[in-house]
Image (tube, rainbow, N blue to C red; front, side):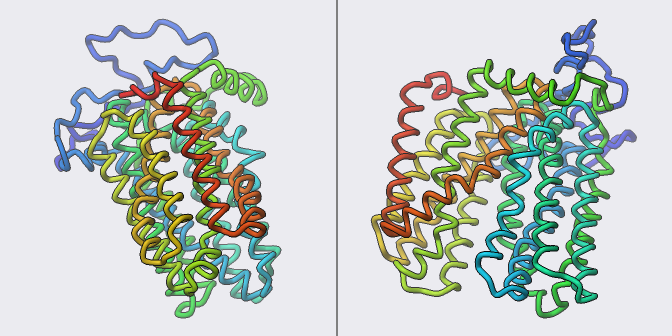
Length: 454
């Protein structure tokens, strides 16, 4: 693809330090009253929109140079994180032989999401987002390097792994709101759904590939070697992100005290009906649909009478379904997204109901495709629609509320696990499916604006 001397292609948004107004657009004369530049001056919109149709539109957002480098940085970072999840789990169990401590180390990542995510969103709305992202990527690499050296020197313990898991969650509490809030500035609102879909597709791809790489290398180069590889991936993420040119308005901005920023962000969510509906729906559907992933071993062992290899295949098939779903949404673009979002939630509910009703492994393998498709529709469209509705000055704080879903996830897993222990996995998942279907139908009936969202 030919690029101009400024490093941008014909199809990408004009991103420069001093904002250059389109000749047909008057320059803004004031701020929005909050000390922040209003969205119209902080968000670039491409002068020339991609004209591809059908499958040729699928990767259109990657034509924008800045998003392309941000996407590559995310690809390396998520590859590192997926490898780390596998290696950390193996290493923890080798050190402790304790399922409880394994669960604690795994849950450590979610703890900061509840306590620090709102601060991460406030930082994203008052500092240069690119720098916040790079600091987070560098910190992730440093944490991996510390564990690698600890393993190499036989100094590591499960407490170190737990501490790093918590620290990694804290890093992501700041990194992800900044990253998600930056995307609309790089591709414009018209390409936002496509960009978010490609993000989701990349994450699905790393979920499929990276754990296999990490697990396969564990006995070849030892856990410390895998951690050093993780650190290298994080370093490459920093390098690719450094090529992203910060959009206008991306400089650090002085503002109100942090707590005041958080309060104003929450007030913005409460008074923005569509944003509030989308956030509530994202939270509710995640709490109802995601616990099955954690209960999957119950089905594999007690219902299907199979082993870990069978579970691995189910996870892989679900990941493939999610990958396909993300690419389909990238291709469709801005087409009946509200109905598709609700349809994805309904599909997840129906798939879970089928899992509960059909105690057969082959049936479950087929159903995983539907579950992956539904998950992709829910997550991708939910994020894209939220960011499209929110003003740029509030995007970081709103996305931090969305990120709290990951911290709240145990609230859905815990009661589901208790119910599965008392009544069986099929009953627990079936009940979650019924609640999810009833909730989604309630939203469909009562939220006409969401239902007709294009």
